[in-house]
Amino acid sequence: MSTPTMAPVNGANRAALLRAAKGTPAPKHRMPMGIRVTAGPNASTTPATSAEPTPVEVERTTEELLRVAAGSEAVRTRKLAEKVTGLVAELTARVDAEETLRREREAAEARHRELAEAEAELASKLAEVRQKMRATGGDSAVSASYGRGETAAERAAIRQWALANGYEVRDRGRISREIREAFAAAAGSEVTQ
Image (cartoon, rainbow, N blue to C red; front, side):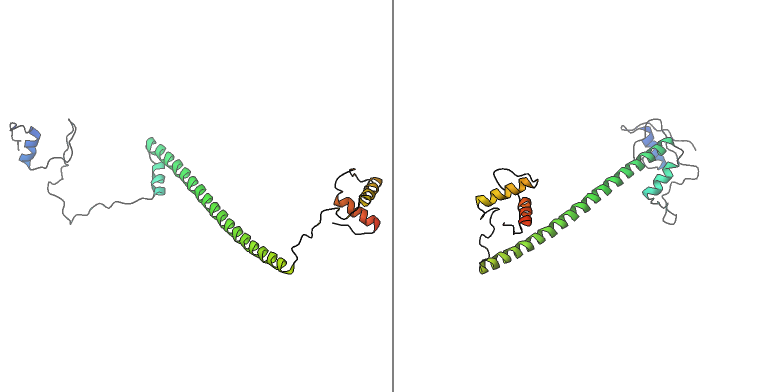
């Protein structure tokens, strides 16, 4: 069968006229010049019916896809698989680090809440104790400073004893508790506050 020869009519190109004569639809996208799309020898021009099996697309996991790509014959595919594997490893490390930081932050916040509750409980108990002390009159200024109640002669005697027994003591100022306790033990008396 010969192809009918037709002249372009009203600006239509020859290929469009031939497709119209044969009853074939126009391509869905423009073909570059010089490329011809032809059907195989057993291809039918009728659309597929529902009785024919349709190809089933198989979903692959990322691990399976990377494994297949790593074993590919194409160098570019293998290199791409290596790059993606590296990126997946980096992403995994980042996500793990973020999760660790999140867990640590949550643990620190929980510990802070526990400490704040304990502080509030202790402050409440302290307020109760202070109130009881005020009620019994035990909140007066009982704590005297060191050496209060001692005479100048007693302080001089302590300094003299300390120097004689190898303690370092200044000529003026406060006498340390250690020296007072040692003097009291040697003299057989109690240490004043």
